[in-house]
View 1: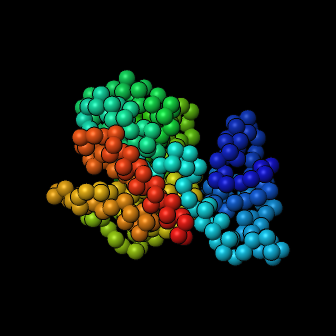
View 2: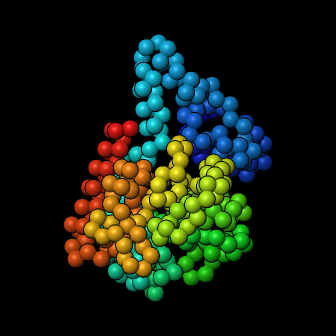
View 3: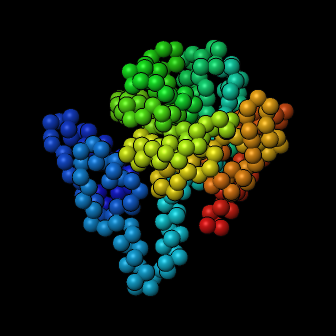
Length: 324
C-alpha cells in the first residue's frame, strides 16, 4: 500500500520485483492519488489502482469547510502541472544544445555551463571522435553537476530498427542518454521498444519526448496529428515525459514542454532555423524549458552568455507562474 501516488513508478518497480519471484500482482492501493497520470501508467502493466482519496476530492472538501477558495484550488492544480523540483533546485529551465563535433570541446562547454542548466542536448551522430571515454566523462559530469543528458535522435523507424539504434552501433544511446526524442509518426511500436529498453538492467534511458513541432517551421500543424500525439502521450505516461513544441500544446499534468528556436539577439540563421525571444517562448507560448544552442556555444564569452540566458529564462518562468 502506498500513501501518496503520483506517477506509479515506485509501484511498477515493486511489481517487477514481485513478479520476478513468481507472484501475481493485479491490484495496488494508495491513500491519495494526486491525479497526475499514475493510474494510467500502472494500468498499462495490468495493475488496477484503488485510491481512497483523489486530489480533487481533497481540495473540494477544503473548499467546503472554508480552508481554501476555488481560486486557490485552481492554483494548486496548476502547480501540479509545473516542472519537477529538480529544476527548481538549480533555479534553471535552460537546456543547452551542444552541436559540436569534438568530444573535448563538448566537455569543456559542459564544464563551463553545467551550473546554470537543467539538461545537455546532443546529436551523437555528428561527434567525430565519439568514444567510451567521452561517455564516462559525460555521465560523471551529469551525476556530479545534476543535469539531464538528452540525445536528440528523433527516432522514427520500425521497432526493430529503433532497438538497434538505441542499444547497438558506435553510440549505444540507451547506455548514457536519459531521454531521447521520438517522432509521433512512428506510433506505438517504437514506444513499446523504448519501454522495454527502459526496464532493462544497466540502461540509463528513462523515457522520451514526443516531437510535436520544430523550430524550422516545416513540420505538420494538423489538428489530427496533435490529437493523435496527445493520445499517444497519455497512453504511455510511464515513458513519455513531455513534448518538443513551439507553443504549449496541452495542459496535461505530469508533462514538460520543451522548446527550441530561442535567441535573444537574432531571428534566423538564414538556412531554416527560426528564433524568438525567451519571453515569447516561455511567457507567451507557455513552454517550460528552453533549448538554446549557438547563441551560447558560439559566444565569445560563454560564461556570461549562459548566465544571461539562465536568468532571463528563469525570470520568465517565475513571472508566468505568478501571473497564472
